[in-house]
Image (tube, rainbow, N blue to C red; front, side, top):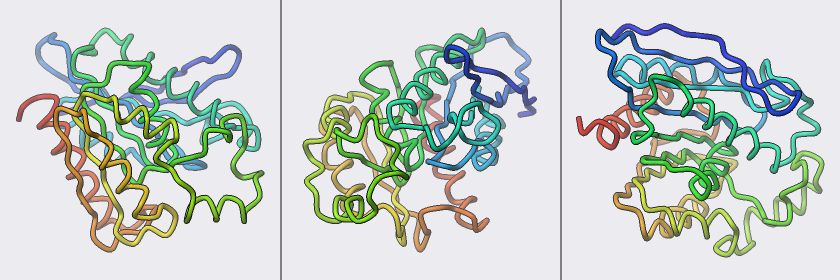
Length: 246
């Protein structure tokens, strides 16, 4: 299916998030299943254009945007707390849902790394029919108003390897999520330990459908085209199955 791209602006008070909307060119005026994408920390929307394009070609209204301090959005990355990231995630979701072509009963969210953590939390505040957490990060609750890059590296490393993450807010929220969820693990992820994707998956106990897939040999950040292609195929296949029954 053909699609067009539109540059959009999403405002949080006086600050602007820069977004790109991928709009399928449907012959009818039916509402469209819709997906919002949250990129990783310090990344940008363009890193997900390939997956947004793949979704748009299959008929999904798709939004990708830059978190504040990233890409073309306002703000400084050095001021981007975890809490501000969540404000951005809510704003992006609300913008997509307000679109005239969005089917509010068929909303998907894809989050990678930091974006995966925000996507998990979002399900407590907004309705999400289908969710993908790709190499999702997790943070201690007391870091909410902190800028992770300004924190002590040794403390972060110790937490990543040893801390109990089962009682964090993200895991408590995902336990309550009743929609459809896919956890994507990158086999050679040097940033997100396997125990984190394992805990996310094990706690999706109330989901109506849950799956876990592994991208073999993939590192945390997907730059190699073969891994990007696999990621697009996994994501598109999942949303087709869970949002369109195809």
